[in-house]
Amino acid sequence: MARRILLIDDDDLLRAAIGDLLESGGYDVVSAGAGDDGLKLFRSARPDLVITDLTMPETDGIDILRALSAEVPRPRIVVISGGGEQLDSLTGLRRAQALGADRILEKPFRANALLEIVASVLDEREMETGDTSAA
Image (cartoon, one colour):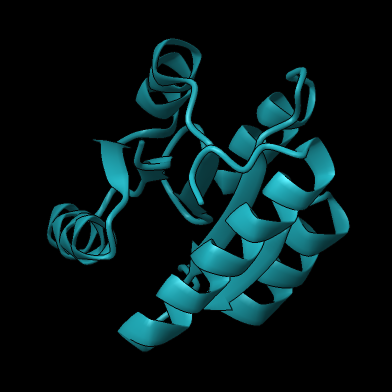
C-alpha cells in the first residue's frame, strides 16, 4: 500500500507540480490550497507525512506545525518555503525546525532532494513504529 502524503501549499501550480512528483515516486497524495483546509483534510485522510508551505495567508505553516504537534501519534512534518514579504525563507524554516519540523527545505529545490527527504522521513517513521507494511 502506498504511503499517503498530505501536501499543503497555497500556490496552485507548485502544489500540482509537487503532487505529480510525489505520485511519480509512488506516493498517494492528497492536497489542500489553504492551511485550514489542510488541517481538516489531515483528520480525514490520516497521512503518513505532511508537507506544508511555511508562508500562506491566514493559517500558515507554523500554525499547521503547532496544531499537528498535538496529534497522537504526531505526524511527520516537512516544511518548505521560499520566503515571503515579511520573512526570509531560512529564518522561517529555522523557526519551523525549532518548533519540531522533521525536515525543512528551501524553495526552489531539486525534485530528487524532495524525494530523498520524503523517503528518509518515512523510513525513520517505520523504524520508530516497526511498521514495515510499505516495504
